[in-house]
Length: 256
Image (cartoon, rainbow, N blue to C red; front, side):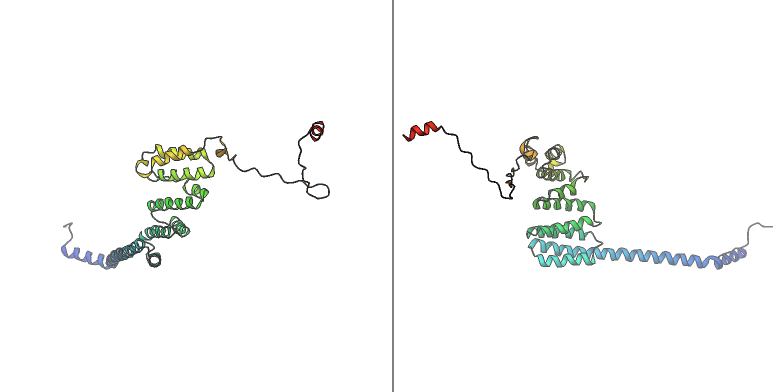
């Protein structure tokens, strides 16, 4: 007996298998096609959003360049409302911070940069925002805030910038040793050749007070005058002026 199935039997087996599993095959193919179509639609819609956000960002840059603050704020609002998932939102915040600084609205610039740092934006953009925010806080005299912002940040590209500003903040806070270490870190960093003014940093380091001096220890603070003491009657006791002693005999001779 031939072990091979006849052509008719093979057809019958295929029909039986198809009747049992054909629905799953068709369903799987349909699901795969739907997923592929959905993915393509998502990619296309994402691309469209990027293109629209890019056009808006270019408009924002023109407004920033011309100093048109109100128009720039409107466009930045549209980017934040409709294109928050795109990379242009973080870039728009950097642009708005620059425009606010040009308009002498440093607190508004600081607020925008603070929002950027609190977001889930790209880390490289955040380093730029962190450096600009630190400069604003140095300008505002918020030296401890600068220290809290920059200490512990690790970035080879931004290390010279961070260390220079940390040195400025430490100096203002009277932390002279830390300021010296921060400035020396800039001077010894090979990356600082293109990112920091080494001569300026050297001058800052030389301008630091010597450790133990009055300026370094804060000993030059004005000494408060002692308060007047009250006597037993509750009246303020005024110390009598001390008159120089004189020779009575000498005065008598002079009077004669």
